Image (cartoon, rainbow, N blue to C red; front, side, top):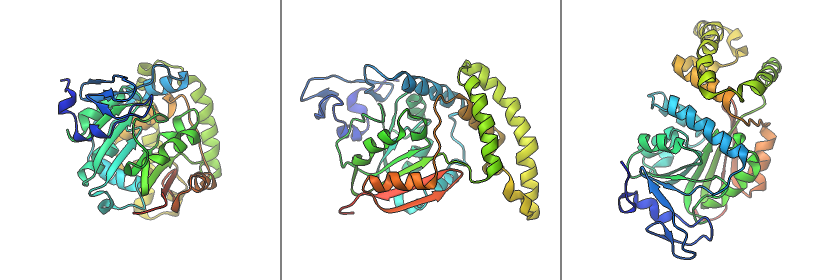
Length: 318
């Protein structure tokens, strides 16, 4: 059911005009008069024109999260793994912006841990997020490079598994950093170049296949991901589980180790993610450290988690 601006989250007061930066009153800019829409409980602030790569990516993830966006009990551990070095106590009372929220699963976990949450996404996946989030969370459909907020607003700006799918990831990163308050945190997750040589060989083969799969109709690719995931489950995940249970050192050499702690459906979801997203960039640890350092962040950490977790604090009062 569509909610009027008066019944949106109180956090709607944080919104600013994407054209001039002015404050909004009933979703109309008090400066330039631009009017924004509210439908199905989400404020729509998408630019009139978008790069083709961005719109194709948004469409891909909209399909993905409509198909795979159900909440799972495993997402709490998943969220805390992605948010290291920040523990569960970090979120209580924080004002958090989730850039590229997708299904809203990370926003949901932050809210359950006591945060006030604003979730933003460019595509229609924002409607999946809206259905997964509490009413007091604000959902906004907007471009990560033109988000409708004043600088220095949030205690935490997080973007988990998003920036590496954008046409210019570093440009998008530079756009979100100023939204954190002085003393606030910026936290990202980026794909890595796998540290094991033969994993990189496999990745090159996957990238060759992606040249075909990223052009497939989403429904066709979705169907193909089930037999692919079944082969990986039987040939990699189950043997890894058995070797891990025996304490064998051979287990360390296996790819896809993370799926040993999740149900089969997560593996299907991630195969679709891997083969459908039009853009995929990967980074070395030094690249992520440079991003954070060049943005002027302090207390920088870059940790491995089948990719790189990059976290840094903006200078100033905490």
